[in-house]
Length: 176
Image (cartoon, rainbow, N blue to C red; front, side, top):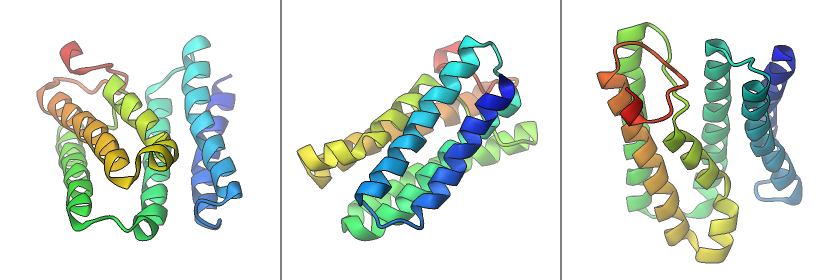
């Protein structure tokens, strides 16, 4: 079962890379994107239900998420005509993440991507961006996503700073 879960996770990486070859926001783009998001939900659910979670699986899952987010940002930032202040806020979130990864690497000698509720929630909120964008417009959709991403980045940074040992499956800051 563990191999099935890992295969689902790896498929998200390939799906994310496939997005680079597709016309942005086309029907095929949305289909592949939806499959990537579905794989993110499925792999974690299956791993927990079959009790096949592992540190490596958590790291691979977070890496796949990071690749998907990076690819989507790479594709969408140029076509969404983000305002300068929006780009600054994106850089703020990225900066907090980089500082967190740096501190985590210095403490644990490994990448410390965490599976907190805030990270999962931010991922879900980001996954729904096309819906927000269509219904609420760019500014409100961006504000929602920024708030979720910044809160989850700050929480991960705080956990990384105060935790004594690495636990990628920590659920939230008060569990440290």
